[in-house]
Length: 152
Image (cartoon, rainbow, N blue to C red; front, side):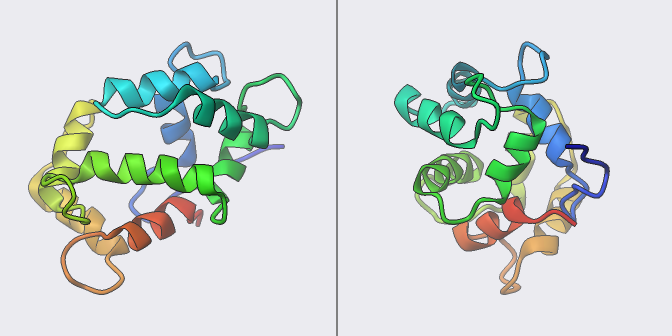
């Protein structure tokens, strides 16, 4: 299945870019270990069993890896409890104040910097504005889920 640049979030981040952050060994596939290692590298813990369940659920060819097409399906899945747990962990990585329930421009800026993508505070505020459905200046978990499921 071919995917093109139409698989973008409104703020310009492509599914392919996110996929490549997870695909550490650059083999074009994401293993459950790569999922666990990725989250560990940014200071979060994802249980290996949960990562394996997620990979197996979306693995279309039975090789126990997520190829890009599998990853896109995973990112679009909204009713999956394991995915919600992973999204919750990812969301919490962006919180400046743990447990605050929101991603601020400062939190987004800090996380992007950790990932090697340095942005100004204004750029981060603009990125948040694109998905701030209620106009309060930050992204809550519902808005984060919506953002992660969009492909325009």
